[in-house]
Image (cartoon, rainbow, N blue to C red; front, side, top):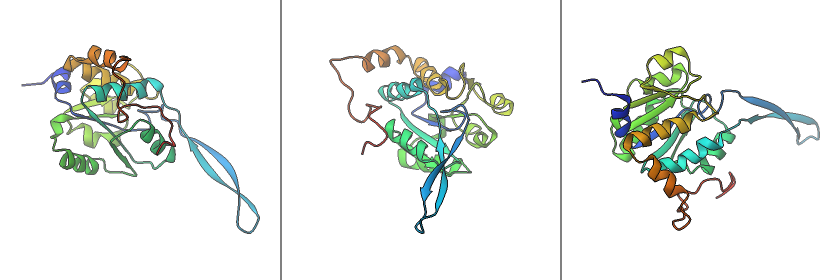
Length: 205
């Protein structure tokens, strides 16, 4: 029997994301930053800058209110990603991963979940290794054609413009709890616990 996207989404316990092209629009800004060498000479290093969607960030809170855990798996290594992940209280953070099934297997063992209970959101061919095996494969609207062709769901919005939020809301809607999670997130009488309360700043310990 062929499962619908909604049927697949109902099973999900963990949502994993690529970063560049999913959390961002895929643009990587590199700026030279002047520094002084020990011998007094001037030199510079490159500073990487990325832009993230606040809508995606708020979606992470909704996902947790829906009982799910979150993670990122990316090939690049970036301090900006580490800071954003810490700001959003992301449970699983893997950088420098060229073969993304390795951390997926690690997460499965740690959390006691199956592939059917994992969703993955990607945009490029490096993501296909996970998308072909996970329970619910999502492609961002800006994904490569090969990636969209193998996805169970393609988001209405592009990476960096709400793609992650689209994936989260589709899963919550499929579970029948989206509106409940929205109401819980704005309930003044029931403040969010620290583990769910995002946006306290990337330097928060």
